[in-house]
Figure (spheres, rainbow over the protein chains, first blue to last red):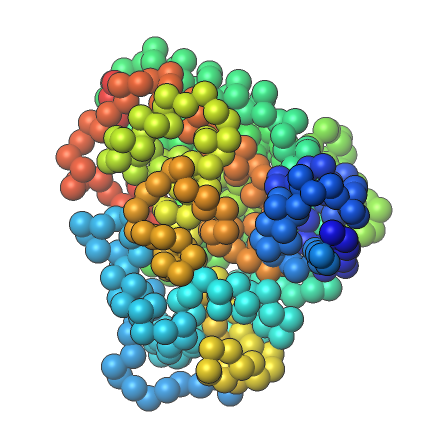
Length: 64
Length: 403
């Protein structure tokens, strides 16, 4: 799995951090997404897929 | 074109929830959803925007790049006569202006920052429950608990003196009622704006460790006008207490009316179950029930229809969250289901920026109140509970409880 994020699209709602805190975080000053792990281990794949699905801004892309 | 379809038979929007089903969307919305994703409705001013009733189409349109949230665009389906005094900051703007303003406050609501507030929120909730238990009963849970919890939290976060709570709660109520004259709403907005403007002035002179002080620093640096800062303050103050207060009171009523569900919640030691219950109650209750409103900037083809540029769009989350293709048995309350795909916080770049804080407060409240007061019960005839049918934010005006 390869994960990419689009900081310009991100609206900082934080759903991804809630779902997969090992893979996503937020910048402290403006809440924009930080990708911690672009190639997460298989154990995190379900949460990452869910994070991409619920991202309100469509800022997370997952390639498998 | 603003599209007034001359068909007197069009359903009126918004409708009213059925008296016997206070937790369900208006029955006509349920019927319209069965007919298909999009239909025309008639608003108070005779305009006939599109109503979007299905979860997938609501999400697609709320996140569509050619759909605008700008309330000043022709064709935007406004909720009532336009009011003066400025709007509610960035929620009624498009990017890039929306993103510029939102990002100035988003850092205060990150998941990590919000989680660090959990002990403080727990202390607030515990203290209010101590006072409830030491006081007379029956008691109105709205006044004694549901409103104070989020008001105390948002006051602390923003740097607003809680002693002013009667003032800001009363004016917020006027702003979010449906049937208020433009004059009254403008006046209430003006009073809150002047109040926040005064606080921003105070923080400019003597900054503290709070969000209004951070906004004041942006004003001093020239990144933000003082009016923009004050408008954002009004938005955060209203959104920060009214919504959560209604979720606490209406959620408690829903659980008292579903004792099996309440027992599961009360007896669980699992924070994940409590967090799941919060998502399900957000999905089920839909306290924001006036529909997310937008206007198309270009022609958009969706679900076999063409929405023309300039036509209004309404996406009510109450019916989107009852879409049977996404949630099995959608009209049932089931705190153990996976409800995370709900659209109670909206969708697209305008999705609620305070949602981590709302979740935290509701998790602490739902995880504490019923455990500490296991015999909590309604102290009124359920048919006589006054519901906010006239509110842009739904809930109960009062909830008499005893134990």
